[in-house]
Image (cartoon, rainbow, N blue to C red):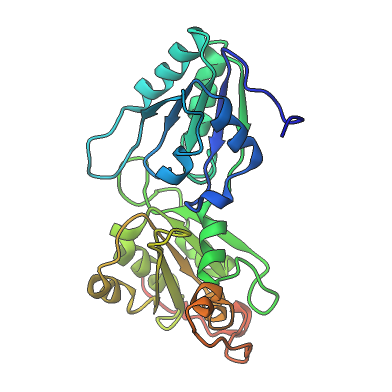
Amino acid sequence: MNRLPVLDKGWVWLAGAGPGDPGLISLLTLRGLQQADVIVYDALVSQEILDMAHEAAVLEYAGKRGGRPSAKQSDISERLVELARAGKKVLRLKGGDPLVFGRGGEEARYLVSHGIPFRIIPGITAGVGGLAYAGIPLTDRHTNSAVTFLTGHGADGGLAKDIDWDALAKASPVVVIYMALSRVGLIAQQFLKSGRPAEEPVAVISRATTSDQVVLETTLGRCEDDLKKAKIEAPAMIVVGEVVKLRAGLDWLGALGGKKLSADVSSVRPQGERKMDFDHEG
């Protein structure tokens, strides 16, 4: 640890806290927690991670949660500048990775525009760590050699408008969707309309990597109804693709609880071997 960089006065470290499990933070993030004067943290940063902070560190909440009162991004960015100019050692702690569907890039640009030195510390994004804890591989030679991350929450609050759903349906065998729980019906309709089969496997992972993790296995055709019945809560991500079937052999958390795993992959087929229906209207 002594060979790691030092968080100096007047600096801001933009760090990822990972998807939830405190064991998944990096050594550099731990270094920041131990040295920061002020930690400005997001809603998805767990108390277990905050408990790793230096006892004299000041914790400032700057979380954003959909449908709830939240700090304005402009105020958060300005606060980082204010703290750094006051000579504080500042850790800006964000869930997952600060540059994956977060506003770490915006905050870094704001720091640049005000002459504040900073370091970016990557974190394990939920689309990687969350799938691993659900027993779903992001890629596997039996299913896919490509994967797409996208957000279900556009800048205007609806679905992102820069997504070519037809191209996505044809080109990406596995799609991992962040912040999409309230829009799962719309997303499923887009995939079905673009030719993906109704029986295509889907997994919804809620509170990934935490003790409250819940994984729902369903299909594109049933996911909206199944989600309503299961009452899955945010934060959650959605995984679309044949890799979901591999969970039958890789659910290591389930195995800890006595679940019997299967190494059989005979039912898994790459996208190119599955029939896709592109004879649709619109």
